[in-house]
Image (cartoon, rainbow over all chains, first blue to last red; front, side):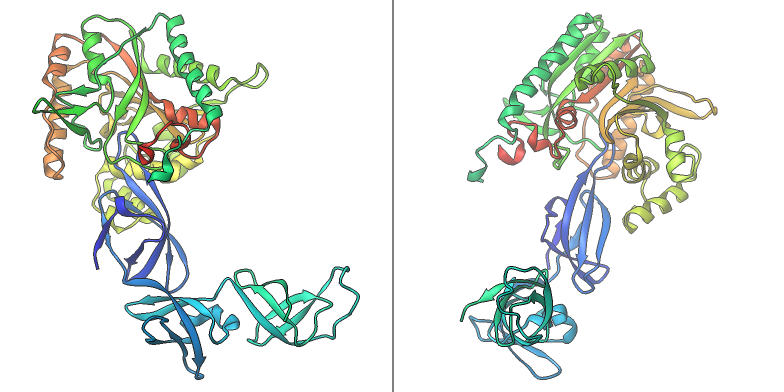
Length: 189
Length: 321
């Protein structure tokens, strides 16, 4: 991979740091009037998810990380791995449970996710921002209570549990924001 | 980018910027300090290790956009100009960020027969007037020596601590790459990352900078008997705003410092710069005792307008040019 100098640092750039792929979140140029310039960088370690801060001298360079984000369709899981397919080439990739992580509870077959590949293998999976999923388990709905506030837990077909309004029932399909895990609305069939 | 045709400054702040420039000029007019208009394009430039000039070609000869009006102003002072100020553009290569633009507006002035503390008082008067704080609420002004300020935050005396200790401290706040850095660079890093954010709000003067960061300032002994430089910086709400000196008038000592910078440039594979002999000749003929300071006008606007980015106080920052 190419090396990137501090003056090429920008948010989104993927770099190797201490052997791990990282993504730049923020880069601030700092320079005392008469002093040495440096870059204060906030990075996310793409393996651990941890955010760290580092300061580099201007002109220092870091190796780029072979990391790409790619839209892929989720196919199925076999108990050990989750399988994703590149829509153009039909090439399939198997992702470990660690790579799938939190996305696990939102994955529905056919949905298109963003899969981050590191050296060609899935490193992390981001589900679509909004998913439509069926409620498989919840307390019976209270009809006519739509105006009242209040909520109850509902288990979705993927296993996720979200808070939903009281009037919803098993079998209803709802829209959920996967970034917050919040109920967005009922989907009329 | 084509969608960046608009100015960075808000239209309502264009007037504010214009009024500020006028206020600066009238402040000095009232005090009988003369405005001078010196070249921004010249045949020579500064040797500073950490300041890079932008090169230009003039009729086939190399030229430089000036990083400050300092050398021309000192030549005027040596010629007997008396108190002068310059409000104009300065250029520094590879400086771009939230607080930096390669082209910026600098206010620089010199007071003959004054020392750095008198000049700090004048900077405070200027900023207080501009900050336009009411009669009942004054701009907070704090004065601290570099040594006491550094020690109160980091626990060590910056003038006497061993280099190895500073390097270790620098590595701890940044990365391994600082393990071999110079004393001046380690101090700058620690001051920027650890001390600056702890500075009180309002205007803060830090004086008696370390001897290794003297630049063009005289050296003297501080109250602890340590050799320090008669250099100060002003910070406005923790942002570096101005840099001033009790000017070094000893031509021989000045030449030694510049020669050392030329050597360091060569050792660090930085672009070679030739010492400005016209400046040296002016110092040889005699610079009157004086104190001088340079103040970043765009940064002053950032603080007065409460903006986060230098792009928001300039008509067109580099990214829009």
